[in-house]
Length: 409
Image (tube, rainbow, N blue to C red; front, side):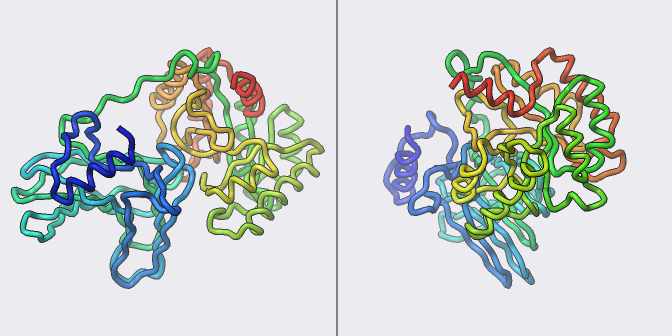
């Protein structure tokens, strides 16, 4: 059943005409990843704000599932909230449902079920307050039971404070009817062998002073993405250290000039961020710089189009191995390693890549013992990279992995 057909069936049911059961596609949310657009807007989705606040709604890339995600930013708030939400879907009364989505946000958010009753009134069920998770997508899931007079529901994942929220891959199913996960790609959908690449974002000085000795000792090579305006800042690599990284066999990529939210800039501003960073690094190193990571892993069609003029690849932060079936050289998937990432989690990522003959991209930031969630201790870095080596999977710099992969496409 196509997404558009399912949307039509849901609309028909809401209008009061009988519709087929959902046995084939138990997810009640039509267009659950907002991939189907009409005039630039996701079909079956609405945006809404109330109270005294300013709200910005947009469609951003990448998504956790597919290429599209829903973005809302709140500022100047005194009261109220803002959110994207899907069109009401019919439900059974006194029945338990499972809801989930994936989100990124820099502040705590709120998830509330809006229930329309048979009397035409509305009631609300709070099901959670997801914590901030600004670096990578986090899954939120909760269950709720509909009232005895329930007719239809939608779910608000909303912001009731200043900040931003990016959400994707919504699911609403009757409890016990969730479909099994899709099988891993095989045969023609697989690369010839699994690969791992190790990357560091931002150009932190401790990545050079603490991280470099560890990766060198283990015989590994990395790709370092540099914010070029930081090269004279005390906590970041200076130009001599960047050159030393390159001389030691590590690759250097671009992370823009000033690390802005690129989708919020004009075309000329985006061009300046991407082209000036590239020119700076190429003049510094005397070699082409073709790899790009966008700040916060945010991009839209304009960012991608401009990036294609200056770079041969672009990376995002979607937690999944890159396979032949999902590969997009301007939407490379990666796993952000946080202070909270356990060795067991990392090993599960490695085994997932092995099972799919996929390319696993691991991304680190700072290497310090008492840092924030985006940093990792030296001992944890060593333990994790030892696990990478022990896996037996070939580890390549990003450019070398791309060369091998592109030959198979």
